[in-house]
Amino acid sequence: MRSIGMILIACLGASAAMTVNAECFGEDDYMVCSDVETDADGDIHVESWDTEGNTYQLDTETRPYANGHEIESSDSEGNSYSIRSWSDSRGVHSEDSEGNICTITPTGQMIGCGQ
Image (cartoon, rainbow, N blue to C red; front, side, top):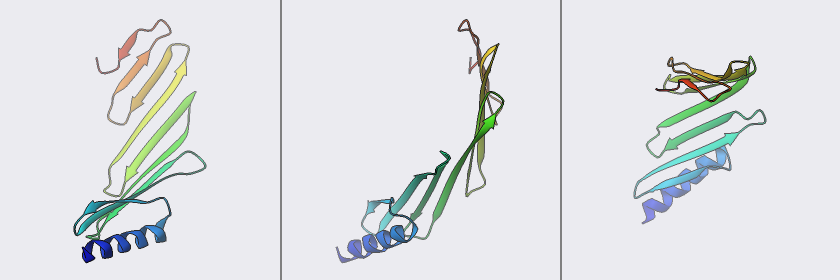
């Protein structure tokens, strides 16, 4: 029981040093803490760490694109993903970094969209 208390104190101490919004979960000698923040631009930043010293980060960035937006995410393991969405006279469109394309026309017809 003493080790659980020490781990919780260590985890809470680490979370207080990083941010006040962290949540920690776990039992016995292992815990995982995560913090999620949304900045003034609406971008999301996630940071996780555990009692074994592992860390993970995920960041998103939103920026204007044509008549819409592009959202790009990347993590501390080198993975990335982006999706663009916009609208024009032909409808509403989305296209992601994996090549998925979707259009919904003004009449409601779906083109692409995983069909």
